[in-house]
Image (cartoon, rainbow, N blue to C red; front, side, top):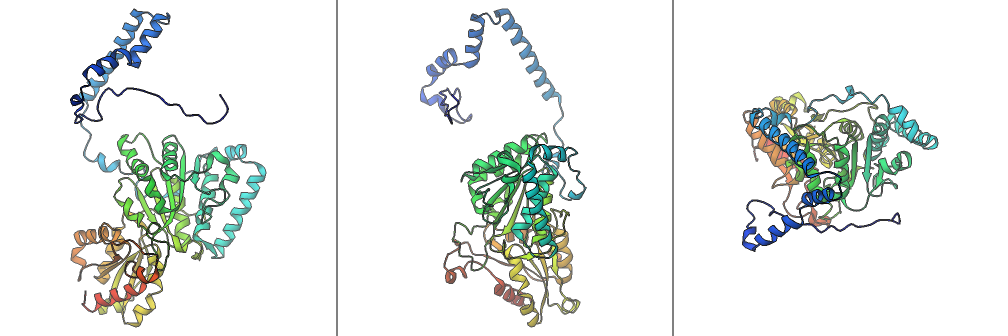
Length: 475
């Protein structure tokens, strides 16, 4: 009636059970089904209605049925005569864009400026350009935060391609870390939706947008909230393959996550969601512990034609600051060597390859001096890509050090470190002089109290001990 929201409740009939295994025959539904087919079949009701009112005749209906049946038979014949798909196709349908795609080479839509001029008010455009300019100055001065770097990347990409949309809770206020700041004020409520507290709902909206030619961004605030959208995230990862490559899924999910020492966010907000989603096929999963990485990876993910998930460190979103390589996209399949062990330590056998990500990067960096004071050194590798995993960079370092420690922000059972350790042991076993030392979270829930948390969450001091153990043969 045009007076607000309405709910349409439809009573229908279920002709069959949910699967062939459903023993519906045991419920005595034979008579019920006969009645339903006679009285509730919508196709039969449609035919009777429009024959009775003269829209078409019985002969016309028969001709239509004949034509439809012929189409069905032809389709079945085509399917039966077609060869089975090649085995290589399964891997080809993992990602719409190859893992080694250079996103700097992707062209922006030619009509972007025209659409922006038509859909963004002059005052709003002036405000967002001033906002972008201010963030770029911060980036050049090395004073931009991770949250602001992501916000800058999002604005640049939303202006570059007007099919880009964004969904977030508290979006108008900039959410918790300013990631969606000024988006609705610039692009309007359709392209920048301030969402209800229902992650499954708005991840599902984004999934539908992606299937229909848009490039949605979902900002989760805290990535653990994505637990309530696991079904939708799984569908996003599978869609390209299950539709035979007919539907791309250019959806980007971004949020703050991980578990820092002294985090004090309790068990619910400290879960390793990055490990939970590792097993979902079709996702590209990255982490960023610096503004530069967050900026470059965000831009690449938005341009990617498949589903991507970026995890940023929840306790470093405003704390970590640094420069940004403006305008540049980063690869989604590469790790970064942040510190290289000295040749002297390599020759002496006192160097260790350290793999880490999120808050582990900061913990490892502040531990390097203590490690060196003990007479050891490390190759520090930031795992910016959790999936696909950059085994080449890992192998190159391990060929020098022959020892590996993983400072891991996920649990011992089913964690990121478990996956990496297994792959290293399977693929690089001959490079190892000692077992991989996994410094991971305990399987217990993360306590709120700092005194208890130390028993669950690993930190820099654990890394110093882990390197010592590897280099002295105690591990």
